[in-house]
Length: 119
Image (cartoon, rainbow, N blue to C red; front, side):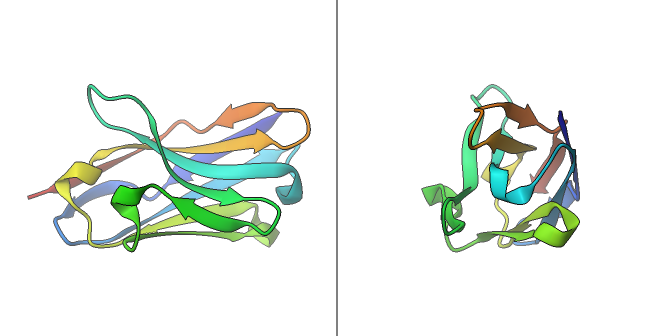
C-alpha cells in the first residue's frame, strides 16, 4: 500500500503563487511509480495537470498551465511538488496527487488540497 498526503493549498489572489507538496509513504519506491497532479473544479471532471513521464521523468503539462506550473520531485524525501505561478481564477480546484505503479498498475490518490484563486 502507498499513502499520499498533499499540502500547500490555500486562498490566493490572481497572479499569486502557491507550491503544493505530495509526500508518499508505505511501499513506495520512486522509480516504480509514475507521479501526476490532477485537479477537479466544481461541476467538472477531474483533469490531468502535470505528469512525470518515464523513463527520463520529463514533465508533461496540460496546455492551460504550460509556462505557469512546474512539477518537480525530491526522491530522497519521496515528495513531488507543483509550483503554481501566475494563478488565475480558472485554476480554482481541488488538487490531487496520483501515483501509478509502473509494473502492477495499482493506482493511488491523495485526499486532495483546495486551491482557490480570487479575482
